[in-house]
Image 1 (tube, helix red, strand yellow):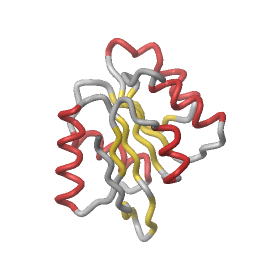
Image 2: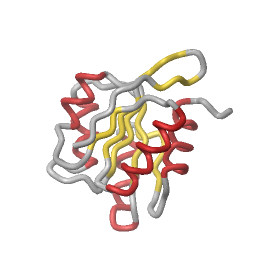
Image 3: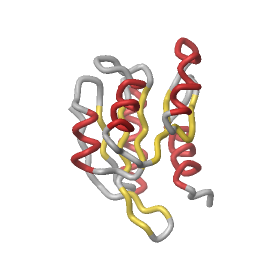
Length: 134
């Protein structure tokens, strides 16, 4: 179980970055990259209560994988919005769930990244969604 809590600095404002993905290689690479940079984060894997974690930590930005199951990544996003989460969202998608992109966008996903991707691309989308383009 991966669970790291740190505070991510974007501009002069601190906010919590929460990432939930099924991809163990991506989790490992994100953990390594964020730790090396000193960037804070919460990193969750399949099977953890992602919705509860979001409301416990109240992140400003969530990265959610559409390939998550029980509940699906899209269902997680839907429940977050129904329960009043107003933070920013980046979605990790792929070829098999391209048809879900419009609904994810309708639910407020600011960036939708298609597979294949790497940690640098995910973090780039986080920077764009957070408004830190520098």
